[in-house]
Image (spheres, rainbow, N blue to C red):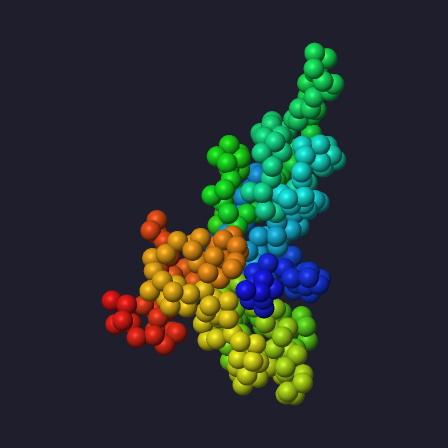
Length: 335
């Protein structure tokens, strides 16, 4: 199974500049996540009114839904600087200490994939988040002593795709928790039209809806598909994206009407053909597909669960009747 796929929710090599050019910078420009935006807007306005940094914020949900964008928007709305890093990059508490001591009042520290912080680094964060102090040890053995260093009041924005992997002590230190959910086709259609305008690409309503319907509820994928469809429109059409161009180009890319690609279909058919539709353990499916369990859990299963094509239970994974019908199987064979 190839790990680099058009429908992959993680950012692909060379894509960062393109995606950044399309990201909104203000809450008023952000499309979707309506309930989240209302609550976040209230928190930001209350903090600004009091002249205080906003409380620590945890954003959790599948990749590609806008957690990093929201972190930058929070910084912009608070008129503060943002310092970005990620859990895997911070290997030692000393790395984090350098970042924390250089923060200014009300700065935003954004840590992506915060669930991957080493335990020692995570524990180092506790006093920084709660008391805005950090402890570090000087010397060793009988000469060791602890020095407390005050740091400026900052806001930590953590993002994670695996909220369940966060320890309770770390999770409890976030005052604001927001779940970022998949987008509706209508919301994605608006995002695609906005991106098309920024890219100076003409697109009609049906063309935008066709791309939106195959974007797996994820803006990052919607913008990536728009980029590919734009290529087809330039080469095979007049440059304008309409329904026919969108349909033809997406079919050529191997993306079906429900936004499934060859990897998703291989996953579902493995459970159906090899394990009679399930239930089957994820380890067995991963071994059959010669793929890592984490890849299936993070990049394949979330969308299949969302659209009701997969059930996940303690006994294992089971394909639903909707998936059987979509793939052309006789449902009665699995009753």
